Image (cartoon, rainbow over all chains, first blue to last red; front, side):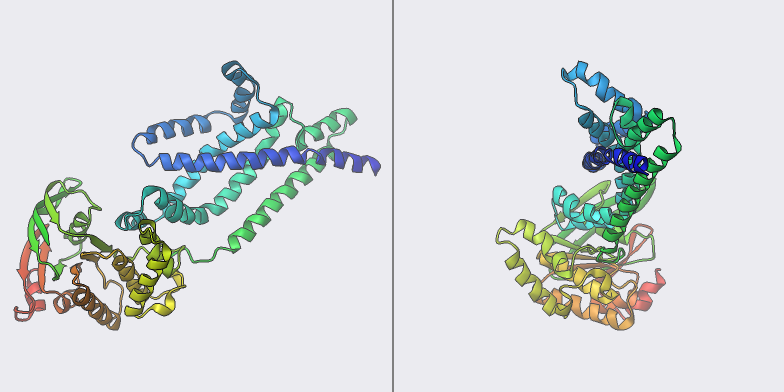
Length: 215
Length: 220
């Protein structure tokens, strides 16, 4: 019993890294995703944004993570620590997917919303900030929760560059004790609990939507 | 007030508007009739610069306001926020002046009680009034209305006629209405053109024309 508890606590001490990577990744991903999706609506920005999204979606996340962690020092002259490299890699990768989610959300709005803003002479910045994005955020919220859950699960890749997250700790126990079942079940319990928590928070926020979508 | 010369608009190699030329007088109510797809809305959108035209000129003296067929109120904002958002961005006096103006307009249009409601809780007629109020907040000289009666019942249409006429008289606003509802147009307009195949088929004054609805129907 003591062994189970100590294994449970050891694996659980990796939650901090997993959550930091997820939170940081979501922050970078949402910011980057919004910028990419708005830039897509400018004539000059569109081909550049399309190329960026194509590369980010077309190459493995592990490759991007390795690139940032191992290759960046020779370009910028200093090494990013594990957390910074992981957050950056997960965030940048996620921004491509979030940009696509935003694109779907923006395209689902009636064209008339843009035209109404234009007719009322609302400057472009305010049109995006106060008219378009608040409506888009509500439409894409369930898809965003999905993306956050996917990102949480993708953080296991941090183990590949030495990060001691939930998964890596479970593997360490498995190797040390020659037993896979228990540590993997413990890791699964943590991940599933976190996913349920994200889903629960998402539902709570979704239920607070205060207007019907169709006016 | 509005001088339109030789406007042409092409969509997918089809000429939607063919050399339309018009002069629209100040403070008049001008109706554009015609069957679906004849170019009424495109014509209005060209005046509002929501659509580029391929040829011709539009000289407009004054500010224009536009009422969309489906209102296009901002669903995440209350009626008051819908009204004051755009003006308060321009008005250095801030939201207080705009709020006062919005309350006055909503009072005049008889929907002051809905000031804190969201558009989703309003009826079609109420949304119509809010859309009108939002357009009036910008103090336009010309108000362009795209199918203002679509989806409204008879009594609400009568209200719309009364509202637009009173706006026209009290505020001296020129109103241009695109609609396929001939009955509505003949009741409200000083002058009506009927567009067919992108051209002006008829140009009449419904006040001097005998049986204007029947007359226009012949050209439909």
